[in-house]
Figure 1 (spheres, rainbow, N blue to C red):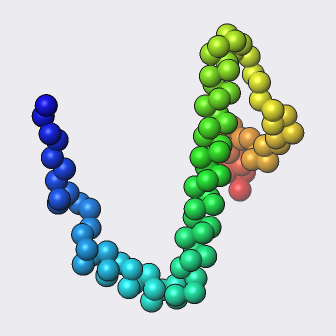
Figure 2: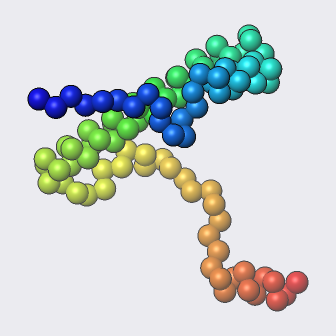
Length: 97
């Protein structure tokens, strides 16, 4: 059996002293009271991202199993508010100004 060795030093990843400096700068920038709030909100955001990713994965798996590749978008109330302009419209607008 071959034992795998884990390197103690990985290039590009900050070690102990570098992490302490980064932590000190973060405390100076945000203050000691806001760091737990920032960590909590970033953890919640990662959790929401994980939930969304799992939802998409399950929907894709259901589509693969059923063979139904039609548009099953549940967000029918989505409204695109971005104006659609073609190159011709933008050229005529710039010429008329």
